[in-house]
Length: 566
Ligand SMILES: Cc1ncc(C[n+]2csc(CCOP(=O)(O)OP(=O)(O)O)c2C)c(N)n1
Image (cartoon, rainbow, N blue to C red; front, side, top):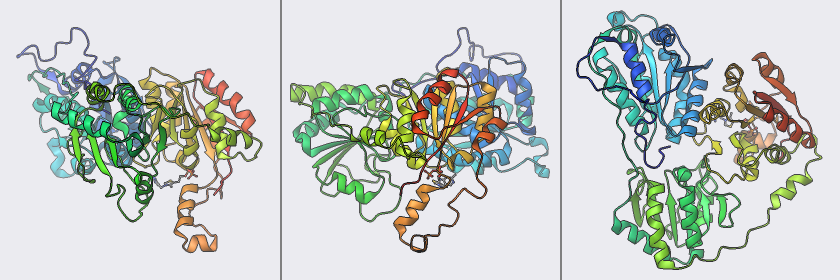
């Protein structure tokens, strides 16, 4: 997520002297690495070490300023770094173990790629002096990383280490952000160089389309009757919520979230908010069919999940599309007007033009009564809990603007529905769809917010992809409350099978869908890794349990048995 204004490397320590002197004494590659990290403002390294990473780990002893967050499997390291980068808005640094460790990381790197999370991913490579003999732990790291990275390279000599690392931080952050991979052979960190470390660069990236494009955009928006215009907001708007609120309030047009959008892009209680578009082309088409124009902001505004025939955007709709990614407008859906620009800066520049044309803001519609709220309360007596009641009780127990990480899958609809923060950066979801992201990402988000409390709502199936996150939560003493909503099955996949109306639906026999024989003991799982755990069976008891866990300031797992409504 590239924040408006971009970041060059922020947090450069006062007095950092990177790049000042053209000549200097030889320093080890490992010191070059630490110098780059310090001058990029990196305070946390996420990783899991092996032999090929020992030159880095060994040097950590002399560098207490860099906190190494130990993950017990690389998938969790990536998602922790992802959550941390999303919370801080800056690239996060990772150190993984050669090809096998990188292999474990690939799944969550696909998630980071979809989310455009800036990550500088490194892994140790075997010592190049004997790599031709094909030693154990050598491998094609670059080949593995390339499809999930903006670029992937192996450092060849210690002299080029600094420039490669600087470039990695630069490119991970440049819009659209994403993971960048650097393979670092062991000998490179042990060898010495006299090459100076280049200074970090500050790049301002708050790009705005030129004046003529902004005028045209304002004309098109204002000339469309507000009930014939829809706004569709994807995650790029996450850092521009104030600006989009001002523009939407002025125009008075309804606002949708992009399907499966993963951050807060608009205020959920706002009368113009219509919720996220459904993640199926035919249903998006239906939702947009009544509009003449749609103003979409951000990457992948019409991302779908199961196939349905036909285009997401009806051919009768004129699409206006703004993104910081120059490759995005017009790429999949033809546009009447495509504009390249940072959402925050562009909306700020657009607002006066829109106001000039409209005069007073158009009247907002009446706030709609929240029927979901009553429905949830009516279900509080159900045992096992209805997922709607469970999500409601969890979210309602939290203070305003509590931070929620959502990997609750079918229960997630309710988590989103009941979480009504007024502040951006309070809701995190995985748009990439790869499971095993939520629990470790919650740790990264907490760390990124200086150990703030976080609620992570996670499905019982999803909780088994990165359960090692519990151990890191205990080791770092992070105030994360994991709420495992346990329906003892992969409900979403069962529902999808029902929709297919094939052999499973007809016979009522679902293969590979139930997690009951044997059942999983989530309380024991948490306790085995040093995390306290509590079973909560009634919605009426959820509030006390989650409040106590939230206030305790340590990790806690709550297991909530829930029903599986179809
Ligand atoms: C890494 C990975 N493996 C498998 C899947 C396929 N998958 C999607 S949802 C799901 C089940 C999730 O179950 P659970 O967390 O219990 O939520 P529920 O559907 O029951 O609400 C699976 C296995 C995936 N998305 N990612």
